[in-house]
Length: 243
Length: 243
Image 1 (cartoon, chains in turn green, cyan):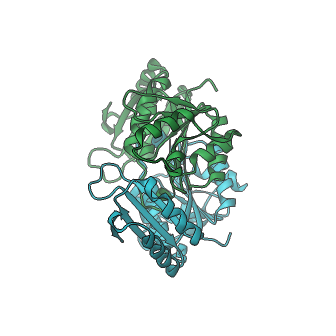
Image 2: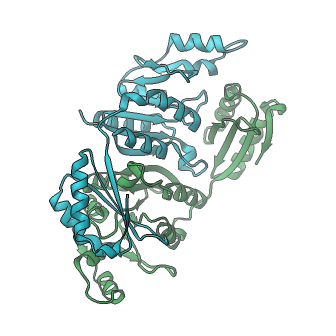
Image 3: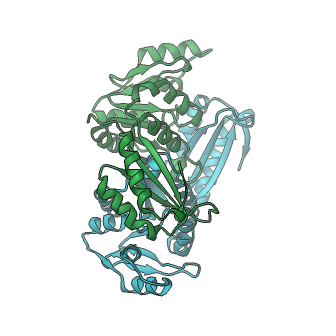
């Protein structure tokens, strides 16, 4: 697992039931790509300890980094900490530093509900950031992030620099042609450049183009050579522009 | 598996790499909820036959209905049909009806790329709809939908009526209070109504409310009783409004 791979597990009945549109996934996908990390899975699951534990166990073994989004508040449906702990085979404990912080922040008595916010999978580390009131929890290779988009983003930004990897180099060709007409050209380029990440995306009802073709690699000159190979085959009148 | 449960598998490197924002998930989540179907998983995976097959096999056994989105065009990265076929242990074959339709629609010669659009997992059924130029593929309990949002929606609408189940009844309470302060009330209502689907969602920077609490059940009077139970406990000054 030397490769820079990641998975995101979104915990949220509110997303599965259509009450809330998840925006953390697309945010993280863009951020990780810019860092050179290959996001291999996005999984949305219910607020269920066993389901969370199964997903975290599976992905933490398959991928280098796992992110969770949601389920970390004080209420009955916030069971992410318990799920991660179960996945990693550790207990849920109150972290003394978090407990102290909660006492400091709270005016008046600190009830059980507030103290639930100090719970962590045993052995978890606290990661601090300049902009963060509350640290990020890391349990082995699992980063536990809150579901509220503003907090999810702020916490990811505090972690961001640790995921920087070799970047992906991307070139894009916009085409006016039926996707089926492009197949022979795409296949020929893929045969010549088998390590190329080549995508073909038809667009519906766009006045400018019909198909967007993306070429990617961590090797910049490989992408440029593959692009030249592709453009040498495609009839020029089909090409709208390249990026 | 008498229960109305479902899972969605989104096949798309373009989503995992942050190039395209997936909107089919939130669309399907809302539609299924309105039909009374519990969406239990949303999984986004790469364009990889083995990964697709693993996910389809798992979910088609766990849930009553499985939907796939994407990966059904003519290019090298369109491998959903092969993945579903592998999951179900059948071959990929050309469907004679689809092949005939492609010949009819195509002016001039029909190449291999076009004929790829006639491929199906062996034994798949074709589902026609009034608004559809091309039928939906159903392989056992798996409905294979295209990723292009306009087509995904049109095809789901053609299927929609077959998923109608007992509806969920939803009530919502908007509150101005710290979520921690609500925990005792929520827990008491959940103890009295253990079958209740109870959600608590803090909202950041909203001038109107701080927490949205959702109460749901397929039994309408149960929800109404649970709502009354909850409102009888919460100090009235915390309640902004109910829906």
